[in-house]
Each structure stands twice: as C-alpha cells, then as structure tokens.
Length: 173
Figure 1 (cartoon, helix red, strand yellow):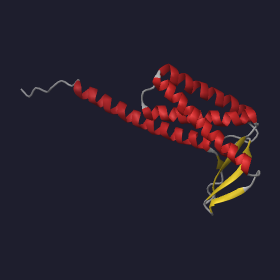
Figure 2: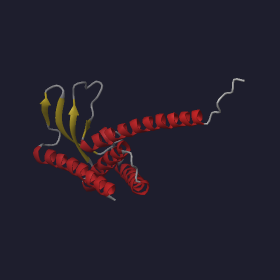
Figure 3: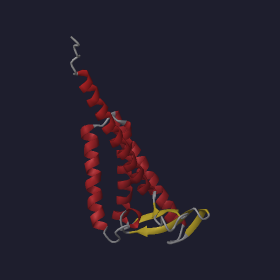
Figure 4: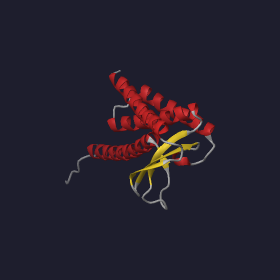
C-alpha cells in the first residue's frame, strides 16, 4: 500500500512540475517568443502544439487523447494490479504516466499542448520544441527499454543456471 501511495505522490509531483513550468511560460512569454538561455544552444520558445510529441501529426487531438487515455489507464491498471517491485520499471511507469497526464490536461483544457524547451544547437538535425511532460515520457520510455534489456539478460542467466543445475554429472568409467 505504501508503494502505491508513493507512486501516486510521485506522479502528482511530476504532473505538478509539468503544469507549473507551462503556466510560467504562458504567464511570462508571448506566443512564439524565444528567450536565449544559452545562446545558440538552448532557448525557451513558447509554442502551442496541436499534434503529438515534438509537434508530429498536427491536428490529430482526439486520436492522441484516446491513445493517451488508453495508455495511462493500461499502465495504471498494470501498476495497481501487478504491483511491480522493480524500482527501475516503477520509475519508468511513473514518468510515462506523469508525462501522459500532463499533456492530456493541456489537450483537454486548451486544445493544444504548451511546448517551450528548444535545443537549437543543431537545427538541421533537431528542430523540435517540447516540454517537461514530453521529457518524462521519453526518459520513462528509455528507462523501460533499459529495464527490458536487463530483464532479458536476467532471464537468460536464470535459464543458463537452471540448465547447469540439472545436468547429470559425467561418469568417466
């Protein structure tokens, strides 16, 4: 029960951080305004994104709402039904849900997502403006991929250990 309370608290903190940063941007910047934080490398650029993460697939709000709701409900169901004990997996799920909820709040209340994190050092390679929620989802997905790789390795090692344990000793007579 304590793990569930901590998980929910962490999700709320993540959603709160995302919403606070978006509020500060909207309250203090004009739409399309860009403020150089590290000139030529990193800006705060306020845009309104009506597509998916990083501005992909503009004007597909309802598709993303439905997919977000299904993913969030599925992950929460898994978390509360299976109660995963692995901290790496739990961290990944908390980040993904926090980011999904943060962007879903924007899509429902505003019809778009507030984006503002703009790494502009390599515009020919990367010209995406994103937000804290997008970061949570991407980092969470990265952690989940790492967890999956480690889980595959653990399973392989376990299988190898079981095979070795069940081998009959050879009799050299």
